[in-house]
Amino acid sequence: MFFHIILERNMQLHPRHFGPHLRDKLVAKLMKDVEGTCSGRHGFVVAITGVEDVGKGLIREGTGFVTFPVKYQCVVFRPFKGEILEAVVTMVNKMGFFAEAGPVQIFVSNHLIPDDMEFQSGDVPNYTTSDGSVKIQKESEVRLKIIGTRVDATEIFCIGTIKDDYLGIISDPGAAS
Amino acid sequence: MSGEEEENAAELKIGEEFLKAKCLMNCEVAIILEHKYEQLQHMSDGGADQVSQVFEKSQGYVKRFSRYKNPDAVRQVRETLSRYGLHEFELCTLGNLCPDTADEARALVPSLVPGGRFKGDEKIDKMLNDLSLIKKFE
Image 1 (cartoon, rainbow over the protein chains, first blue to last red):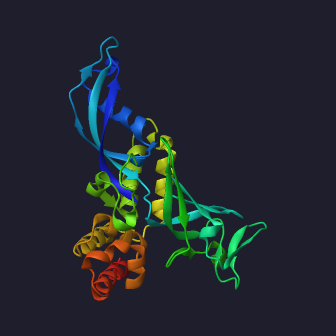
Image 2 (image 1 turned 45 degrees about the horizontal axis):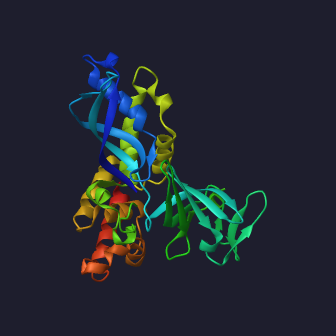
Image 3 (image 1 turned 90 degrees about the vertical axis):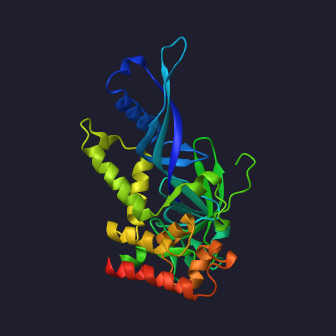
């Protein structure tokens, strides 16, 4: 799920930037430092939308750098266990398939794919029901439930399932063509 | 999780910080990112070339999975859903997934069930009906 959240960060600024454009420099540096990063706690920082408050700077002894506490609003993407979302299938193999929901990767193991779906190898590996009515392949859109997240300092990886009511394929790229 | 209670979105256990934060539907994120992307393009030093991979992927994702494209419709969806006393997280899950039936809604948002806020199908049906009307007249 995407969230609009207020975060705080201590920014260090070199004295050469001090002047009438100090705030602009600070905001530009903040965007460069923060956007696109990922933390286990807050998820992926997608975009900064505004700066709430820049606190009083504190000169660091010895270096002359100044630390400013900055409060900013941003859009983050944070997956949660138990969340249901839609994703695009990126890779299919006999172990299961990988899907992508925005910046996050989700793996669905073949144990968590309904039992009536079988793996078919070939040019376009896919999972298909015995009657061929449902097919999951690359670029398919699926609705899945996140059942586990693995959180590193700089990455989030999810395990999902489509073995539940109202989960599974929502559009089939093969059917359209 | 640093010793916190285990998170589970189905029971709205998403940590205090995120409970207080505002959830966004995919269509709302699409509008925000589009706006931001335009701003970057107008910057002198070719800001649009240096958007992060996370930004690019998120933008692609929300464009693909937005149920409502028109900003007015997006606002209406939020207004309509917020009249039903939903939590932000529930509101956004419903807005993103647009379930067709009350059964589906309860399966996708299990936290609707306990607490008796949505006794019977009537209220859920009405809510889903409101949603589909917005979609129809978009």
